[in-house]
Length: 253
Image (cartoon, rainbow, N blue to C red; front, side, top):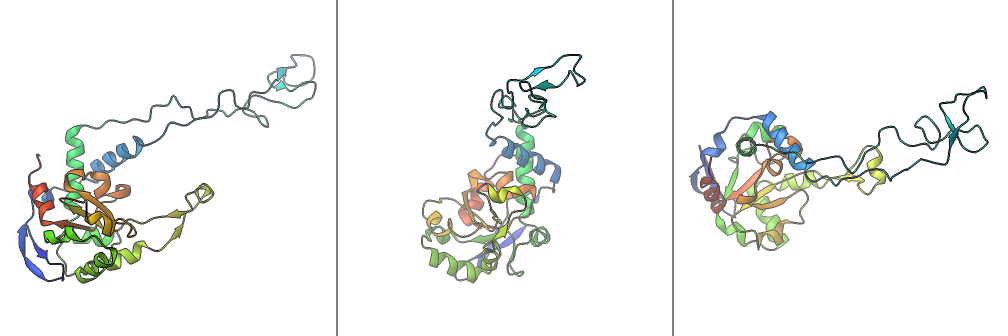
């Protein structure tokens, strides 16, 4: 499969053959499994405090005309301790002893990455994911290695406009208020994912692109299923440099 190689001015420099990893079949089941493993392995163990809700309460016992199964606080009839009482402990609360870690086979993880990578070359899937770009572009967008010399935001924006992908940055910049109680817990807004920029050396290029909304800059060696398919949804709009394509070509199956 051949794609165009674009210059920083938006012109076509030539063509390049994509590595075989861009031709793997789409496996949403493996992608979802791999991404879920990455998410669970980042979870910090959390749970309720030891003896939370366990007040000083004792059962009245028989002969009082009330349930002897409900502990009472002092001489009052107010119940305590058990889950169906006010202020009592939770029924089955989360505990820090829960094991969140999940494992995945090496071959499954690799196949999930290759499947998500091939989805970046599928224009229909990229459009279905909601990305905005010039439909005349060949996907993934491959640019010359001079792209890695960009270190200023204004230069980065100018190049993205010439390539025809800046509309996706505008799409990701729109704030959306989160539904539910998360908006009261320091995560009021949800961020959209935009461009994935894959380079050979990200030391300079990171300065120009890291603050653009939804943009991720990674080396080819850092790619995984979650970066290529955020939220388990494959088909991310990606920009590869020529050097990054050659790095991908050297992967092991």
